[in-house]
Amino acid sequence: MTNPFPSIETILDPQAFIRDILPGFGLDAVVECQFFSGGFNHTYRIKTVDGTVYYLRAYRMRWRTLADIRYELDVLNHLKSKRFPAAKPVAYQDGLPFCSILAPEGTRYVALFTEAPGPEISYDTEPELVARRYGEAVARMHNALDDFSSPHPRFRMDPDYFTVRPLEFIEPFLAHRLGDWQFVLDFAHTLRQRIQALPVEDLEQGFCHGDLQGYHAHVAPDGTLTFFDFDCGGHCFRAYDLGVFLWCCRLQDAVAARWEPFLTAYRATRPIRELDVQAVPLFACARYLWHMGVHSENAAEWGVGFLNDEYFERHLKNLKEAATDYLR
Image (cartoon, rainbow, N blue to C red; front, side, top):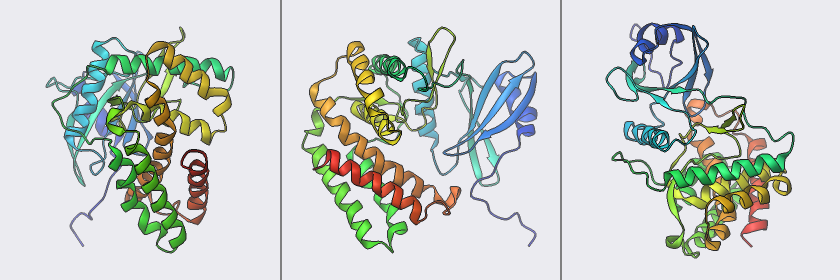
């Protein structure tokens, strides 16, 4: 066989970024470009001769459309205009905040971001204080995004996004566990009914980060939290952003230490109606379902090895505990 073998996704050469791409972003004195992490997209850590650090994201071709990407970059530029601390896109030589490259699998898009200063947020000491600061910062983020709009269409995070879409990806992995698959179907059906009955149309909506687990923020020396990685965000119910925080508290057995301080600080910074507070546990349930769905959806790129019986035992246990706590 002499033709190049087809690929689903490739790890792009860091040296080629230094040579061919980064000068277009105005970075000529790059001393280091390293593949930093995979996952939803591929991230490279860039260091210039003066020690300045940037992060380059190569979007995966099957994960985000160009319109999705431009919407996300519009969010970050909006936050920049509001002087809210978040990673900032760096303009390419044509003025756009991204460029395209022809990878073996097809056209991929690349964006460059400033570094969020300081170490990653940690709850190892004074978790209540850290949770309060995080809750206040999330409220200020929502305030800054209240008037956000973009001409670029992006997926909408509606009830179907959480209760219908994940099922098509989960089902093949539970084909041999019909009882568990029926439980997942029942969980999704009940959750959808509960969300619709709030009623869902009365919930506050706007742009949501989509991955505010209590992390995705660095702490500057003056205590400022700078947020990054808005890839999972979109137009959604604001209660979902809070629900993701509650979800992570549950996973880390930290509800008692973090949840009330977070919510109290959020409420002190931004008004929130009782209906939206009531919706938060339902969106924590939605996050459990989304999480299983997104792992299953990306199996072609991430591999199927981790989607084994042990994985589903663990995640179904979490789902059943959430059903007991929030869906009875």
